View: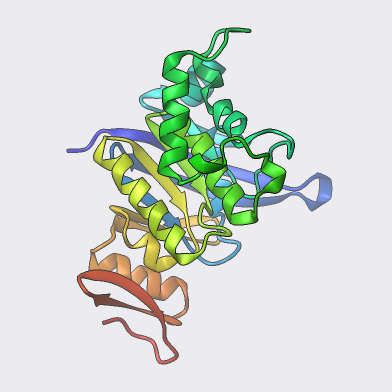
Length: 264
């Protein structure tokens, strides 16, 4: 039986200010298994990114979130930053920083104040840049890179933390299909080493590579199950109003557009 990496209970969260403030999550409860890859999917406006921010401890909410058995807001900031790495949507970094320096930012939770990077820090950054195929750009500035290249560098920053838990919101943005496949290989290697990965994805076929899938709609979890479970496939078809169908191709589940409904 898998341990629980993240436990969320009765989560409510709102976005906006004043009269425009809107409740986005409505009492969400969820357990994320340790050492597995869980993908969160659902239509636009389902609350996926909001939930991920709550699980990361970066968005105010009611209810409780525990990380590796400890209430997340009771953990000292540096300890939490060592245990949980976060890659958000549309993240930025100073354009004049080199790729190496951006990736080294992920090592800050491991460094003492004003101490130079250690050999372990250098090794972690090199490993992360090589894993994301960004090593050859290490001396280039971030401002010289394309959107997809920047995304790979920001992923390297998250990987360099070497955290037990990695949360990623739309990590495939700006990545072409070959580099999406590279990302998948990175995630699978992380899970093989025991890392817990949680991703919000629009790419349903990619999400079906995960160990488990969380389906969301209207700020609630409508299903949470194994990616190969027929009940998970039905939940996906239903949440997208029968506009997709789940098929198996070469032993892998894929989601295809469907005008007539049903799943195969």
